[in-house]
Structures are given as structure tokens and as C-alpha cells.
Length: 138
Image 1: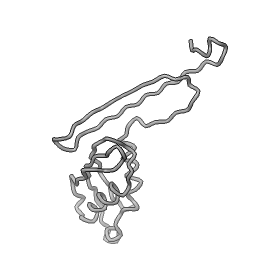
Image 2: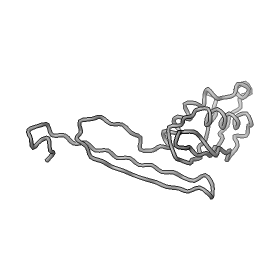
Image 3: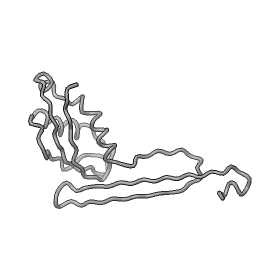
Image 4: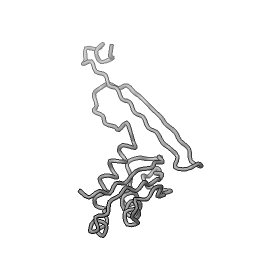
């Protein structure tokens, strides 16, 4: 029985859960994961994201079209650059490294300088990831 129901008030309950994880970009970095849950009175709305990596990938995808280099578009150059980086507590990318080239220096530079560094602050914090940056003409 909920405390409010015992006094004749409305019965309500609320629940929340979350999880997160991180992966090191090189041998000197670590990895970790965490999870949490809570109960409440159910009177407030809530929001959250269970996967910080998914939110990050969506954020970067939203910035990719504006970062597509004009010269690469004109040449109809396409490719996927795999970029590894960590995100500090302020949402700034650190230790940015190109792990796999797209095959085009223009696209590789745009992936690092515009998509990753240029879209800060990033939506995840204290996380190291490797993310494919996909430049495709539509």
C-alpha cells in the first residue's frame, strides 16, 4: 500500500531505472559500467536515456550533413571514418584519434574537426568510444 492511499489520498507509484557503460580507447584506459533504479511517488514526469552511446551517435549523425566538405560533395566522395575519442565531464571530446580512414583525407578531417570537435558539448560524459562517421550523399 502506498503512503498516500493510507490517508485517503490517491495511490501512486513511480519507478525509474538507468544504466551506462564505457569502454577504453587504448591499453592505458579503463572500462566501466553502472546501473541504478529508484522509486518515487509517481507525481512527477521523468525522462532519461538508457544508452549514452546511442544518444551520442544520434547527436553526431545530426551534425554530419553540415560537416560534409563541399569539395567532397562535388567529387561525389563518400566514406566512413571511424573516430575514437573520450568525452570529459564538460562534454568536450579529448584524445581524438582516427582509427580507420574513410579513404579520403577531406572526409577524415571533417569527421574529426567538424563532427566530433565541432558538435561539442557532446550529450555523453566521462565516456570513451569509437564511432563510425558516415558520409553518404543522399
